[in-house]
Image (cartoon, rainbow, N blue to C red; front, side, top):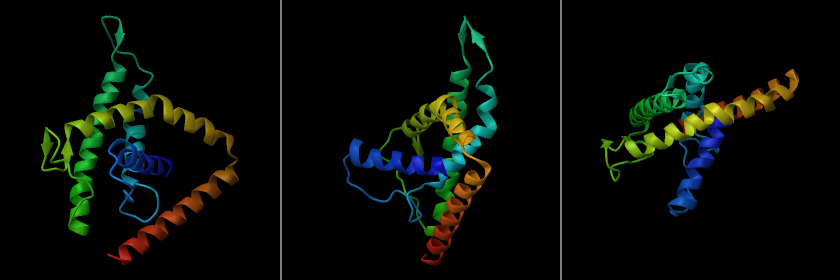
Length: 166
């Protein structure tokens, strides 16, 4: 859930500060979260995390960050492509359009965002996730379960309300 929130803030930051398009809720749901970022983070953790501490040296340079970057890039791009088709099936459209970008596929995925996701995911694996693990370890079991329950219930209510309003 934390990464779904961070993904929403990232998207809004791009829209408001970088592109200066003005604010809009970047998500499909009502709350400030983008589940694709949460699922992406979970997928990165489950599939790439163990590679972080491995060494694969070429000419004395550890190539593992590059391998993780490429892995994140491929995973994120495939997830974004799948999400576009799922959203289109349920709503008739998807929330982004990359047709203005070079090297795009049907406006659903493009090289530029894939590279950004690769960079962000690599930073996530090496820096953000270890930081959050340290924070979570400080919580007692009760507080951890309480946080999970509140966030989960909030998310499920949001999903139900959104589906009901389609």
